[in-house]
Image (cartoon, rainbow, N blue to C red):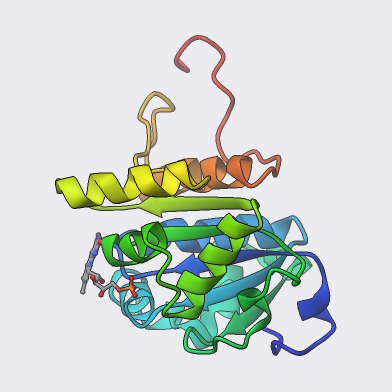
Amino acid sequence: MVPGNSDASRRPSIAIAITGASGAIYATRTLAALLERGTHVELIVSDYGRRLLHDELGDEAAVDRLMPFLKQKYGAGVAAGSITLHNNRDHGATLASGSHGCSGMAIVPCSMKTLAAVAHGLSRSLIERAADVMLKEQRRLVIVPRETPMSLPQLRNMVLCAEAGAMILPAMPAFYQQPKTLDDLADFIAGKVLSALGFEHELYPAWTGQVRS
Ligand SMILES: Cc1cc2nc3c(=O)[nH]c(=O)nc-3n(C[C@H](O)[C@H](O)[C@H](O)COP(=O)(O)O)c2cc1C
């Protein structure tokens, strides 16, 4: 991890926000896949995002130990990239400004609370402000909501975000790839996020017209 004012933090980057929806493994797989491609990731984790990382992936996935965790789980290749960790309460961080060279952002997973805030442009936290910046600058914003069932306000908030230019990419893994493990399911969603951000990947095989035998 590098501090927010280092040279690395001024390179072109992708912002990843982790919020308190279930599915922390989608976030870690997305992070690892971006890092393996040498990407500089600007990471923001909400308070409940921290809790879900811990509750779902264990002590070793704590935010301050994330890089060693990613190396251990996904391999040494993640060292090709770098992470700047931002404080979600820091509204003066680079990501709060459209002048900063961050080309896209994914909120993965995205809670219904953060979804509502983005839908209504509240900008109360750095995650909410950075998402607002993506929309106003017409850059790629990928929202990975996770909730079931969904209320009418939640559905409406997704429509509002889509109308504002965000891509809604629900955490709905497919099964035609015949996943065998939780990691296979996470690969599918992370691959969809990378595609949406404009990255090539091999996280799942392209559909050939037939299920694999
Ligand atoms: C174990 C646990 C699981 C949760 N799962 C979800 C979820 O899947 N989707 C959701 O919208 N909120 C979920 N929540 C509730 C959010 O964490 C809560 O609304 C929180 O305030 C979201 O804040 P944030 O968006 O700033 O992270 C969960 C909370 C806990 C403690």
